[in-house]
Image (cartoon, rainbow, N blue to C red; front, top):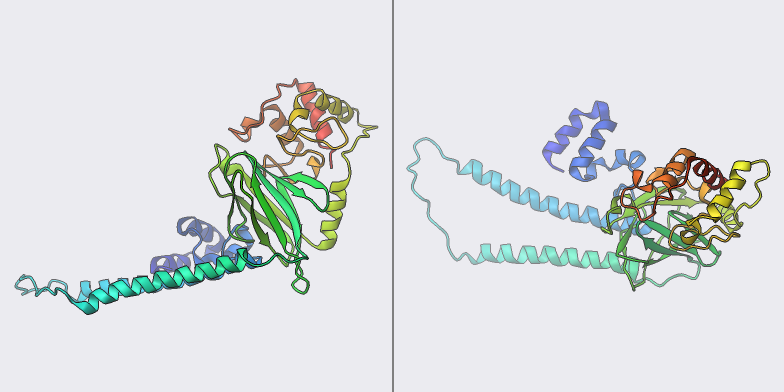
Length: 359
């Protein structure tokens, strides 16, 4: 951390939260900001919540320590030279004696950088091997992650569940580790799965399957996003990972296994909206279990109303936002591949009433 940054933090301590956010945007999340960032920055690399993220955190500290040492040595030598050999009154302005062919100097500035690079290489390799080359335990929980432009599909093979955009996983009890293994694939272009507090980024590459894992011991909501430019809406291809206790996860899974709601007695608008949905092009792209809607191009909508967000985490899931999304997706997420349905106002109200009942 530079002296100027330290001074800024001291000056703004009385208004810590606002200053931390401002300085964090400038420094890219400097190490000194980590304690204050944990509550406000759910994507903070310096607040690990799983083993892979902790490895990354320790590696980041090690790299920062080495680069800080380099900065101090180089900056200190530069400051010494500037002060010690500054121009003084009475100098004759003659060029000092030049030194050529110093084996000691040339050897030092060749060997020391090589040793630093080798050390960083070996340390990074240890972290990579410690996260990617370890055998998969029998107790692992498996989720298939498929990246689409511009949303996430999640499949739970052992549970028969397919959902979208909001990933739910159980905690991993340290006494009985049950890490979640994510099998990553792409349906179109290259994407990248990155939730900083849970682990490092892993690319989703067409015609290739990658794998990563997380083992958060505590419940919570962890945010991330696609970290590889994948098109116009790359910045709004967000990630939401809900880590739940085993009981809460089992309750969520039981709900997800239920077919979509079909009975709407007492709710004429929802009943009409179901017919509007089933008689429009919606069914070509989306799935609603138990109905004629079996499309796979867009997210599964079977339990849409149970999600906190729509548009891959970009917009809160409210009836107003959902209605606007159906009417004109580009108004909320320009460049998304969902077409405008051009429904009249009555049908928009009806289909919104239907989708808000799909819990």
